[in-house]
Image (cartoon, rainbow, N blue to C red; front, side):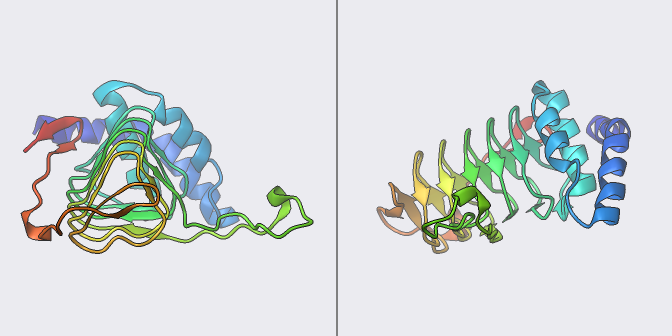
Length: 206
């Protein structure tokens, strides 16, 4: 009951920002204030910050469950992202065009890019002037992603990505990978047997 009340209050507080972005986006058919709002909200500490970030993304993302936690310094860069139920996002994460499945955990400083080829690399032209290509990524259900991981490809359900890894090729369901580039290590994991600890609204639960 108390948690639901806090979530409702957060929605009220964030309503002006959410309504502004929704109105501007419908007129211009693109993200307008989304990046600035996301950067500002990422700097609010503690549980209050997590509740406010979740409230804003419930207004602006393609889909965002209310039962998630987004910790200090973390933000989304595109409103086309989606987040399912009981997702935990640690501190300092930056997430692009990605869908994140339920029960998934991102440790601190995880970077989820919008594909591997965001900038052109043709010789003879400034890289910043070349066409940009964004690719939506999928991070499956019940995935554990370690600290400081860079993700440039899909990650299957029930997988584990070791800390510091660079995922440049798709990770199969139930696979444990690590390294740069990330490669399979050890045995496979049964997706249904991967335990998780997630935070919902700022409090961790088993």
